Amino acid sequence: MMPAHACPTTEASCWAPLRPVENAAATLFLFPYAGGSAQSFLRWIEHLPPQWSVLGLQMPGRGTRWSEAPLRHIGDALAELVAQQAQHLDRPALFWGHSLGGILAYEAARHWRQLARAGRQALDIQALVVSACVAPRYWPGQRGNSVVISGRQDLVNALRRYGDTFLHMIEDEELLDFVLPTVQADFEVVESYVYPGPAQLDVPILVFHGEEDQTVDARKASDWREETQADCQLRGFAGGHFFFVEHEAEVVEALNAFLSTQRG
Image (cartoon, rainbow, N blue to C red; front, side, top):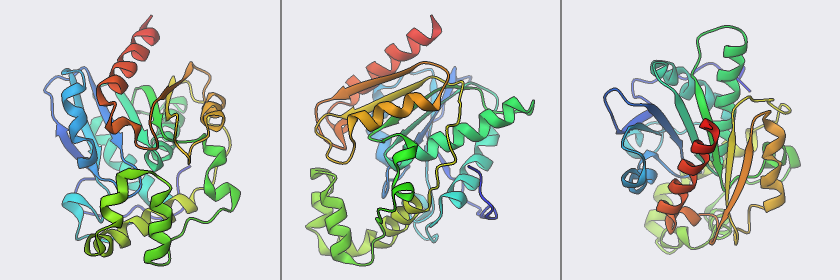
């Protein structure tokens, strides 16, 4: 799903180097959840294989790009992130997206596999990992279930659905005002997504979900298998939408085990 929108121009890179590794075996691209930033993954670094170079998606309106206006359409987000991924074609890639990041990672993978099928230079994607993310055909833009935030109370109500992770934000009125524009924009990105049909990827997919996540139904998460001709596995963890906060090491261990099975 590449957009009709023009690619936004910006001097800042949208891929923050969380852990550069010279002569890395692979590059791990991390796609954060709505309201998240590249820094949302910093605690993961110590658990990841040392031979991986790690990049985190830093979209406008957060982190080191706080002064930039946030993007509001998924097409604009995809145009920027894949354009700058083109600088990293020199080694195999792994995509890992959480929640909204899962859809961004999926559509980026679709883009690169389409280029590869056309005989053009493309990222060599070894695996797509999606967590806390139902299969793309169930996303809000397809169901007409609006998640657009029009004010403070709408934001609070939406964030409560995702468990305790956002409680500190909800209880701090000053912080809530500070993050409102970015979170609202990210929810508009969610709403703008239109599922173009199965991608027919040839990339293995690993799906993580929290067993107590009220926003992600396990059956709808398992339907990711319809998006690839390769292997697709589902793995549940105790916890809600942000289960990985309490299970960082176990989640990375599950990823390593999955990759080992793909290598045979």
